[in-house]
Length: 275
Image 1 (cartoon, rainbow, N blue to C red):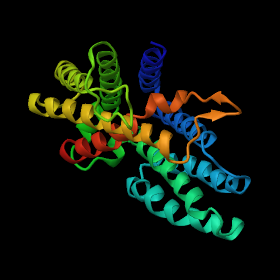
Image 2 (cartoon, rainbow, N blue to C red):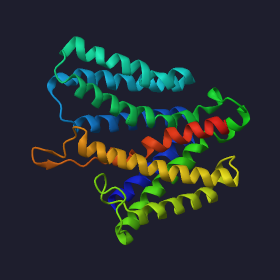
Image 3 (cartoon, one colour):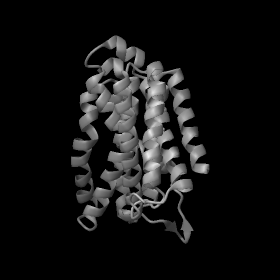
């Protein structure tokens, strides 16, 4: 129940930020990425020598959002996957040597890709008129509204999947990754997300009926992938579940885990076919 409240609380924050100004939503998302990455780093099994590379990772966040702010889509799309990817290993080598190199660099890059690069695709919707490939009028009318379509559907899919799994679920989808998710919840999540997409899409998107059905299906499936990938990372990728005997609760990451997949995949689909 607490997690469900957090999901909808985040959706309300997105709605309020989008209602004011694109810069407000940009800053809100930048802060969200920072909090998620900080929580991710706090859960890692690290050494003192790894802190410097974490600082450079934090510095990449405002630069990443600056490219969005000025509408430089080309730089945004390559900045973290290519330039930061190539730069971080150099920081680690020249300052801390080779001990633990692969572990610290790969952990940092995984965090940046999922929790910064993936989620920051949401900010691109607000800047759609500056980066559109087709019709500026459609981009101005519907670009920012796509966030109000994507986020509630992503959260609804998570809620439906989890609630149905808890009440009616019997067959686990991936028990080793997340034992709380079942096939019953997965199917219910898809059905509910597609239905909500068909209902919501005519009001805030230029989607046709068939496109809204496909979008709902895509959001449900990719949201599930995001959830299980983050679950596996928390269990296996050098993440610790306790600190000094105290269980760590990943509040921010739990709220955005599915968005790490739905945001980039949905953005590139509508950017190619609509905007």
